[in-house]
Length: 329
Image (tube, rainbow, N blue to C red; front, side, top):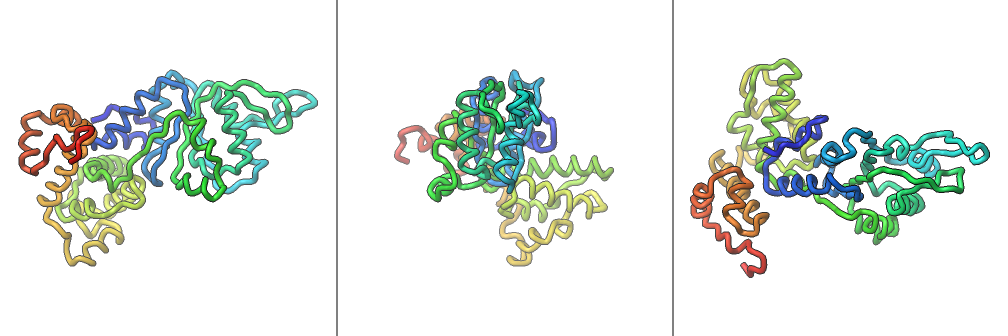
């Protein structure tokens, strides 16, 4: 499994995910950690942007310095600027109110949702990232700042740009690298790993005996689309662990949203073996796609032998050559 940092629960999620898609995210994050360039994380709500940002910070030379989170939804322009940049008393040249950038000095500033800023603040923040300096409200002089900015967005930034609510340069120029975090429905192989992780975690916290999902509950968990991603999965498992008094979590312990899948269909659509085979095939295809059709690299990504990879490729009728760059297949 990926040896990522576990400073908080959101970061702990990263240590158990094993799909090729997330392996690519982890590898890129590890490479980005050593630099100072601003990074933009894009993904749906609940995909763990904050945990990934904390991991990048923890692996960086800035790890001993602060990690400061900026999380505002609807605030006034004046409030945003004073909280972000601080506030000077021009007459005395003294700092009246430290901002988030001051708190993060030497460390990392994580902006939870990039699209909430007004155009004016976007322009000022863009200049701050580019020039590594700020001009506080109430002051006419700039001062240098030593802060790395990692921002996240769950919104359709291209739509916001088209609607005139977001500066195109703000979304592209300051952020040297954009990293997409895939939603949970794109990586079903992570669902069971995360579910098992949450069962252990919640069980230990609540003093419950070791528990596991029944076959029927496993099928539902794999079939559910998880629009809320890891956050929703964690809440679902916490709900089930608290309701279950034994060692097997069954369908009746799952939240109503998941039970509705069973009631709509009468029963889970596929048998557990068929569902797991579908997940296995998806995992192999993803690994071959990431490795550009290289079976040895794909096997390494999945933590299996080349021989087993060859057997699975033949079993599912997969042609690794179709994933090579330039292939028309």
